[in-house]
Length: 124
Image 1 (cartoon, one colour):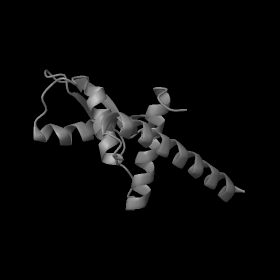
Image 2 (cartoon, one colour):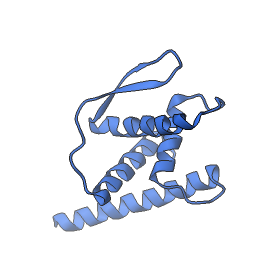
Image 3 (cartoon, helix red, strand yellow):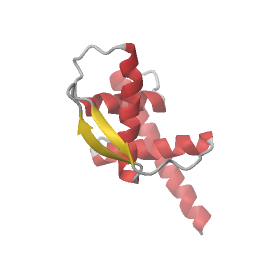
Image 4 (cartoon, rainbow, N blue to C red):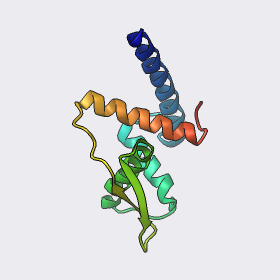
């Protein structure tokens, strides 16, 4: 029975992920499918709240990091700490991520991203 439950949960996550990618790709990348990193970048940009600011190349990595911290915060891995003088959010590592295989890491990030967008009612 546990396997059946896991498969239906995985199927629901896949459906929600596909729907999220479709929505975001249509809106932000002219229909070209975004990957996990691209969605994390959008989350980072959203959380920074400075969408009209001209970003430097180094800022892209920082935006993805903000995205990672933000979506993993509800899972107990990070906690928001403060905004610096330029308005960038900073996070404190609460618990290190367990060692994950690439597929497991991707699944965790997809689940965290789906949870983020569910909480903001962009998807159902």
